[in-house]
Image 1 (spheres, rainbow, N blue to C red):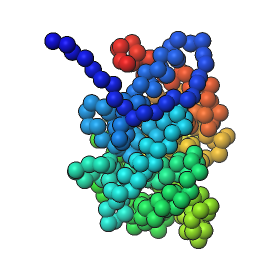
Image 2 (cartoon, helix red, strand yellow; image 1 turned 90 degrees about the vertical axis):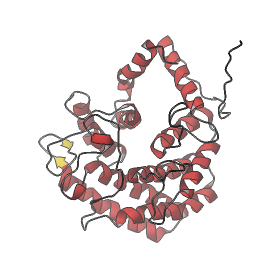
Image 3 (cartoon, rainbow, N blue to C red; image 1 turned 45 degrees about the vertical axis):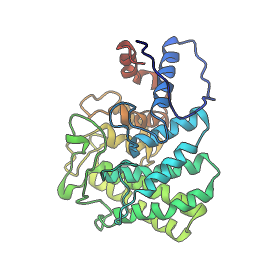
Image 4 (tube, rainbow, N blue to C red; image 1 turned 180 degrees about the horizontal axis):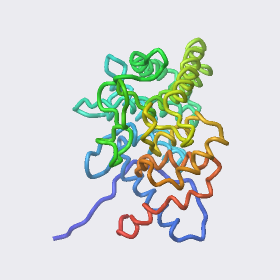
Length: 315
């Protein structure tokens, strides 16, 4: 009996090149690119073995990997359109699509807004982005319906997953009164800025002003509710007694804090192991925060999980 396998994947062609004398880095890049390819077919997939679904949180990062390494934006465009097609009447997108089961993760709809902005940044296809702006407005309208007068999001329904970390049950951040939590407020702040950027350039400038004003209000509220001056970090709740890398990573990547303050926050995150730690999924954003805060040269120090995977023989 002959046993054989056939490799199938979306036809990405790697056009990027990274030259190094490190065999370890070469191996990580090889394994990483293979992983990116086997998770891309007619849609992106969270894994090629288990669920095989196009989850928004995973797909945003996969789309950026595709662009950086191949320059091919077609599958990302398809993903944006597919997720847009999943929209429910309240304005949210499905957390994953195509899918026969409706699953809603509100923060993933905000990451979808980020995907639209990503595509706009890397592809000159403005007409497509314009067609997505009504969907962007729908997502933000949904969140606005759950904002208190100070802009903080309260009592948000569905599964508010942020990262698969042990300290957060089912990946849901610790919440305070009325289920407020810093990471969702900061992510909404970021989404307002993404939307304002697109609306100002290719959409409705009046809406751009509204989104900018909403972001400004939310920024003030985030500092009031969550910033702990003694700790020098943003807490997850207004009690200011639980701290996570996720929340402070978002504070940096969203531009909530200036570079000087970002460096101080990163100094703490690099040394304080009591913080709720990022998993490999959220490590993408942590690494982006490293670069923004001026610590890009510490990136290789964050690769132990990938080294462990090579030690296990993963390919």
